[in-house]
Length: 365
Image (cartoon, rainbow, N blue to C red; front, side, top):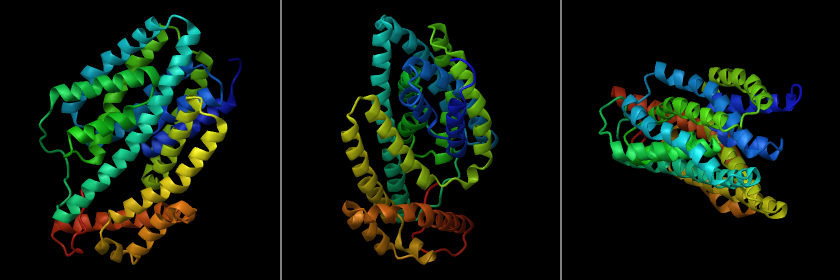
């Protein structure tokens, strides 16, 4: 690539800011953007994104290290599986497909399926968090402050690392979504911040191993990589600085939508079918997601923000097939849910200090 490509720098800045703001979406956004919009070869896109991740991951990881939300007893076992698996997967994949055309085609297909898996993992994660929070409310549990003892399951943890290593090594996707969901299933006692912090820290040597392997097999495009670094690294730092203002409830559904659209495009789904499918997903899926999320918050919590719980659930749920639910869901995730989160935190603090709080309004972090 000759000269400076300001379009790629801008794309890198947008993705970098998203990563810093939310801690998610790095490889899942950048790699398909490069392949679909900039017609970059899949292998070069994966390599450049991994090298950019080498500089972005420590930004988020450093924040969590300072906040003591990293479970080092899990990091070491995850790395034992992920680092060698990522390195070996790159060489094995290149050995299996000697022809460059076949290699790029297979990388594109594998990337499409991995993006689909990542989107499903994000939806499952949101559902699982909501279910556990609802169960905690019913039991009136005080939120865990984290940092307590956990029984490390060595073999499953190593296998999670191997799975993440293979996916990240071949596609640069999977660390921030699939690994976290697996950790949630194996270690339900971990707080959300501990899950994210642990994943970010173990991802640093993981992406380094995968990036080195790709460079050694000759996938590096210096111009592309330089443009990505120029745009993404400072934007990631800026996003991290303003991350406290991020509306996660809005960003996450958008990211799931983008992942699914990218996956379908990479898997060569026709444009008409892609348009119809994603329109239906946007209109119905977001409304259903909002209705389920709203129902997971108990009535006493809604009373603290003076909002009618049944009205919002019905508006999103029954209005989903007609487009009304979609509009209502945007309003719910943008305005109502942040207030519910604030009320939840206030109730949790009240329960922890023994102060008076509305009954059954306690959630786990």
